[in-house]
Length: 71
Image (cartoon, rainbow, N blue to C red):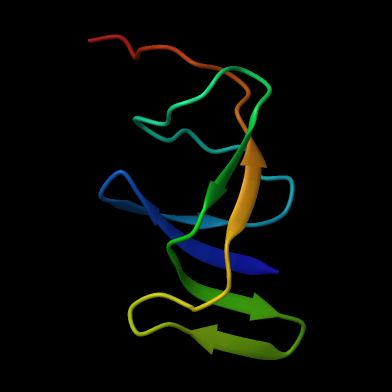
């Protein structure tokens, strides 16, 4: 399964067990986060494309670290 999500004004391609760095998410370390803006999903042989987002589909993950990037 692969998906393309949108958060913080950017789009990210994600798959199960991926670790990605996203800007500006609220929450504490270890808390789950749900991203409802899913643009595209592939599941087995099925491809779903949203217009612009898919209804009833979301991506769930956990916050592993909160902090600021170096400037």
